[in-house]
Image (cartoon, rainbow, N blue to C red; front, side, top):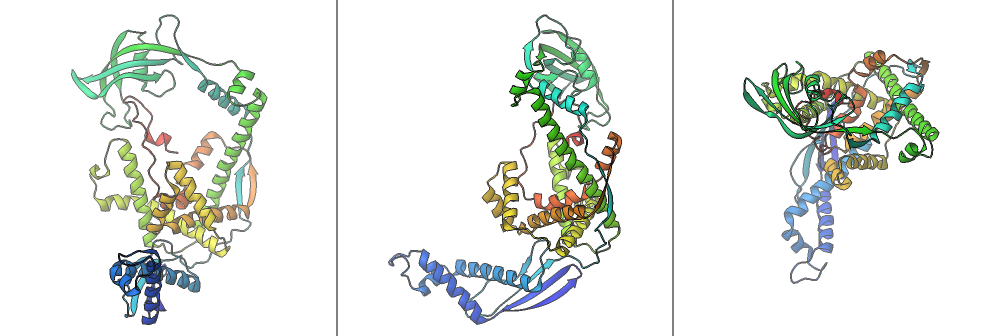
Length: 478
């Protein structure tokens, strides 16, 4: 086997491979031998059929399998010799092997650009000191207590009040015309938790069990269903029943229901969990700050195929979001080109972060073991209720194992940059400052996950939100 390498661009290579007749015939003979040992033909004992008969009978399958196995072997050897690794899938241009003929084919793929990395060793970064706020722990314990609450019918007839759970029928109309989308029976709602529109909740509070009421409900201008945004409609309700929450008393019995021996141990466990979670958040914020500053100091071309792959992923995510709202991406009044153009900037940001981190991983000789990739596939499969083997086969078939490996490499590279930084601990940020720093595009996380996750089975769609629920889609996105 001989090959020649052509640099199509700073981020793309093409390799032309020539396979001699002798290597072709040897590879075909090996595949024929494997078939001969495992198939049984009428009139012959297993493994005793002549090789020429086997090859004639299974010619297409043998030549196709030989081609695939030989190319995979070549690719592995060539990549090791050249010390290169494809960023995205490998494009193949060629046919199938045939006995007695030399074989030529071409592969092309994208690689990391060559550029000078800025110095990140000793780079200063502020990181919030992790402190445990007793008030936050109290809130968590209270949420646990609320989750343990038992619903019981109210003892005496009365109207609903905050904390109650009401089962209600409702139907909406506008100018005397019924609105089918605004109709439900036995709709259960928690009063006072802000999950429904204020006008609707106010209306529900005017009726007791087995009572009717009617009034007007105005939808906010930014309502998730744009069909109703800003509209005011007439709503009629019928309250079936009102239940109140009976919460357990604070004490050992409550702690034991939560799986702990005492309230002290319950509180200690919550504090530990809170500190760990908060530690991950502040670490992520510090890493984000480091990466953004390093990217400002680096200049390199972006692999276009990688950018296009991220555009595909972003559009897939948008499609899923719209479908959960009962909408379609192709009904947004925009061409495919317009939709892709809208996603390009975000895709380029993700690609830029990913390329930078992979370059760091290459410089630092960071590696990912096959077992780590397998563990990631298992985690992804478990999260979505899939068969790990089927998911792995999907990634292999679609040349996406590289994306999983790169996801892990990028994570390790970011951790290494953080470990080499000069970290200055600062006091806790205010809630507003924390949110401000957390909200910008999480480039490093998207870069590590977006492309690799594109092969995962979409998680089961969430149940449709109540027609009068007010929470916006983006409030639960994180």
